[in-house]
Length: 108
Image 1 (cartoon, rainbow, N blue to C red):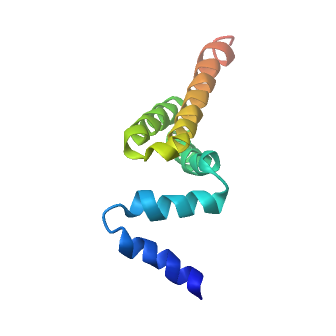
Image 2 (cartoon, rainbow, N blue to C red; image 1 turned 180 degrees about the vertical axis):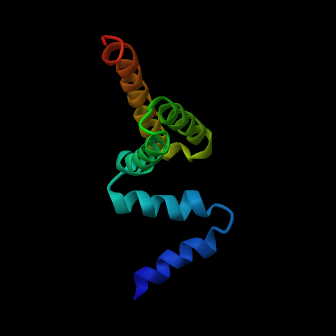
C-alpha cells in the first residue's frame, strides 16, 4: 500500500517539475530504458504519418527528425537518449526514402 502513496507523493512534492522528476522516470522505467521509450514514441509517429501520406516516406521522415530535434532542449539532460532515438528513427527513414526514390524507382 505504501508504493502508490510514495508515487503520488512525488507529484505533490514537485508541483513545478512533474515531468522531469516523476512522470518521465516512471515511464522510462516501465518500458525498460530511454531507447525503448524513444522507439515507442518515434515508430507510431513515423507509421501514422506514413499511412496518412499514402506510403510516401519523405514527410514522415522529416517530421520525425524535427520532433527529435525539438525534444533535445525540452527533455532533461539525463533523458537525451529518447531524443537521439527519435531523431535516429527519422534519419533511418530519410535514408530509406532516398533509396526508394533514386535507386528503386529510378531503375524503372
